[in-house]
Amino acid sequence: MKICILIPCLMVENNRKANYEAMEFAKTYGADEIVVYDQEFKQEDYFNGFTYIGHQRHRQGFVKARNELLRWFYNSDYDYAFWIDANEKVSTTCINEVETIFCALRNGLEANCIVATMGIQVSDERIKAKKRKDYFTKVYLLRSKSGYHWMHGLTMRNFKKAYGAEVYIDERCDPRKGTSEDTYFIRLLRRLFECQLCPTLIVSKPSNKMSTWMENKDSYDYPRIDYPILDEYIRENLPKYKGLKGVKVPDFVCLERKNTQSLSYIKPYRAKRRKK
Image 1 (cartoon, helix red, strand yellow):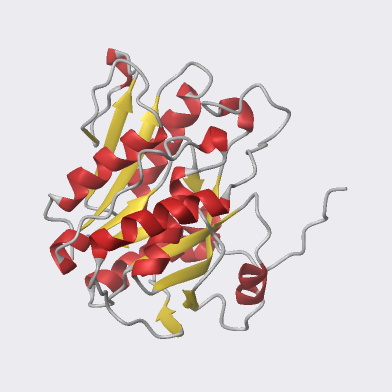
Image 2: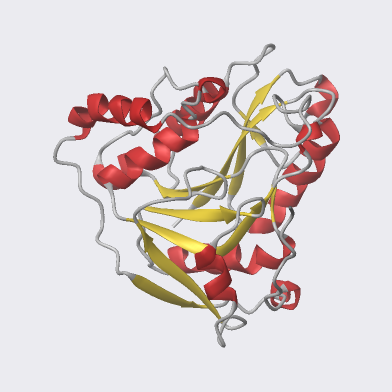
């Protein structure tokens, strides 16, 4: 099984340094190739170790960048893809989760999509998993039917290669209007396939000052998600995928952690002080 990383990247002055650091860090995840949809890059922004497919002089928006990466992926020989934004990282304490999942997929684990948690969001499933006695030796995947509506840290199967279908994001989606493209995509995938959650796989975002559209706010302040509109888009698109079925996944999967240096990064659970 071959695995690639997909990164949409808009390079602007306030996020250039964060992008450099996070994209270089992505090389530690253990994928076979890192594919970047590049927008507004200067010549000095291109580095060895990445495959660039965008070459856009101007920003193309959230939907087009992700859909072009999906199109490239579906028409590649890769079996799975891992999504990460250009300025964010898998938390260092969770590198072993990525290594363990990639290893399991390469050794025969079958999955449709595996979602991750985010450091800026509280997760009850994450707290419970990190409190387990075997947290330092096992990684757990849980059947996921709701919540975690993002593509940050998403591992997805090549649906075209496995099932003969290409699943894309509706072009009407716009996070500025409450119709976030990654929320749409995850909700659509959950309608089409049995999905899973890795609660201890955490994606960390930098300060909103390094965002491409939240830099002028005091913190991340996303518009309220308009779920009825997104679900209407999904209902309109579902007929395209009639009869599509993915692999059946169990309610609970236990993976033995891969024995690598990243085991030393794992930390025991500590309750955080909640902000007022």
